Length: 283
Image (cartoon, rainbow, N blue to C red; front, side):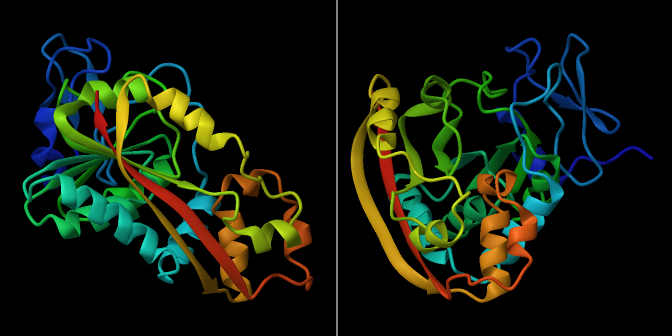
């Protein structure tokens, strides 16, 4: 039985452009989105649009990573991060804004922005179909679509009032193209102190390159200028299951030996959360 068009996807349909043609708008069919030339893209029964075609995406969280992230985020340990991202977005946008979350994961941060902006609509892009299943249900005004951040986005020029990027890869040229001239890019990224206690106990965890901030500035500077930067840093308590989920939800999960974590070895009972959140305006 064909999948009907999810209401949130219908709400954001005018933002989308055919990934193959790059210019034509997409229209709903029986369980698909279709451009006038005839290219079709499935609407998954879980509610997201499968726009990613051709070569495989660069990466994508697997089921175990997504489940761990959902469990950990449900504890509220990262709620201050969601709050600062939502506040920076709300400070720069009207209540009826269009918000695009690139590398949206489960939609946790996008939902926070939409809660702050009662009339806004959101669209999350991610490569992980497992994460998109959650993102498509994260908020009644949040649509979700499978896409790779490193490819030209299947979005119209100047479609977004806010582009949100939280712990995700970046494509500065595409961010600039899809933002309105008055729009804002919100980037949240970890500092070298982020999860320091876990790094001390789990040596295989990926560390933060000290030069990461300089690289970010060089990449964004041709397209954006900084409006404001806020640092969020605090300690949060961890149960052992929380600590295991925190490791398992990050890219470090691909490097850590799970057998090492499943023993009785010590894990920290609290961890430092340390991020920088910056709002940028287009040049």
